[in-house]
Amino acid sequence: MNCDIRKKTVACIFAAFCFSAFCQNNSAVSEDEQIILPEVTTTVSGDSLSAGKDALPDFSKIIPAAPSGKDVLPKLPGLVAVTAEEEPVADLGEDSVRSVYAQGLIGCGFPGYFKGDFSIYKSSGDEPFMLKFLHESENGYGLNSAGDGYFDANTALFGEKTLSFDKITLDLNAGYETLTYGLQGKSPFFYDLNHRFFSTDNKFAWKIGHGFGLDFKLAGSFYSRYAGVPDIEIATEKLPVRSESADVFYLNPGARFFWQGKYFSAGLSAAYDFESAFGESNYSSQSVNRGVFILDADWKNSFLSAGAGGGVVVGTSIGENSVVPVFDISFGAKWMTPLSKRPLELSLAGGIKSSHSTYAQSEREYAYSAADSLDSETTDWFADFKAAVPVSSVLNLDLLAQFKKTAFGNGAREADYSSESEWGLYSFEKNERTLFTTEVSLSYVWKTFNFSAGWNSHWMHVPSNEYANSVKADISFQSQNGIWGFSAALEEFLGEGSDVVPIIGGTVFYKIHDSIRLTAELDDVVKLFAGDDRTYFGNKYIKNSGSANISVRFFF
Image 1 (cartoon, rainbow, N blue to C red):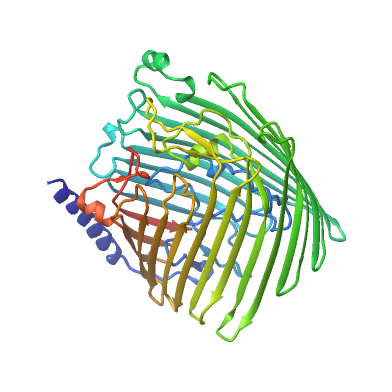
Image 2 (cartoon, one colour; image 1 turned 90 degrees about the vertical axis):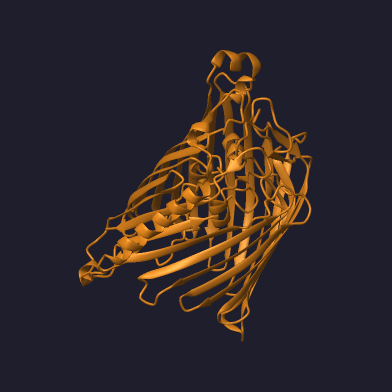
């Protein structure tokens, strides 16, 4: 009976989409209002306001960048991360008088899905900016009701502003997010988890002259987590306080002095990380102080590149070490072949890199978890290999191999999904590990038809929030005039805790006007019609498997 209801619901959604799509006239737009919408419904990061790749401090070669405010919330199964959809390409020719644009998306679907995504932005010219508001909620997972704890809701507000002067560029960025998700009746004490996050990331770039530059950055965040507790007295008596709430402050200033020539560049970087927990948690006195000092140099021409860098990490949470050395060496090459007009590209890098994961980042990466302390340093020997091989003018082969091995006893922290805690959330473990990951992907592009397939594999250690192997394939097509199109995707996970049923989904879009587009989407079709659940990496929680949605996107 439930399956019949689900099938009828899906059929009604598609019928509504088809009726609204084909009953509209595809009216033309005047030349002075020329607008081009993106032709595929791909969701990508829309943070396009920047001062250029060489204008801001770059510590990523050896010290991975600290998480931004937009990536700090837990990754929920079935909930799309907060990202801005690809901005439509506007006519910015001499005859165009437009400078500020707005776009929006409204969508709904089964089971209990709603999304509103609105933004106002200026992506070119003087002083670009972007304001974005998003609300997304799912009430019920499959045939499981929201009243039983199967729900999530995400509300976010972001703002970016770039100020440009004669030789100075200032980028300002701030965001606020709230995220709530139910614990599906799996916790005897909590019925949901609530996350709040405020972040700011400000960058100052000064071009001194003669190739010299000085960059500064000031990033910070405040992260708060608290649980819904039906009986606060029972929970307080039986559970550690940290399972119920967490309040963590993070600050990350940095600076880089550099010289950039035609082929050669060099720079000296320094950064500081401060993280502190406070409030009523049983680890509120913990704090992390960390300093990073890096000297790097690069050389490149049109077909060869080489780089090297080295430095030290000092701090209060770097294991049993007083100082952690870091370095990297990299090489790259690209050249033309008779097979394609695209170059063949190869790159190789290796060394020792070290990073610090914030408290919020740990809980973001591993859903249904609660960390009992601030994280310490993670240090690895590493080696990376990448290759982009154009097999022909329409076929491309991409290869990736990554190796990591714990160095200086500074292992990586992961959630332990193999054992349950009495409060229903999972704890973390810090372990030394050896990672060897490979990825092979093949892509084919012919006119407006696209096909790609890939295989990702962990040959040694498998992170607790991933599977040993994953295989995926997708296709997309759109008409020559861009009025309609479709895409379909299949993904299969293999390994411990995986579901043998592949994830199959598809999307259809139709432009009823040059600035309005309707989209219908099916996700995890097999589970949707079968009414079955899909677990979250083999643990007791489930993902929102199976959904049918319709949405309308407009641009003006």
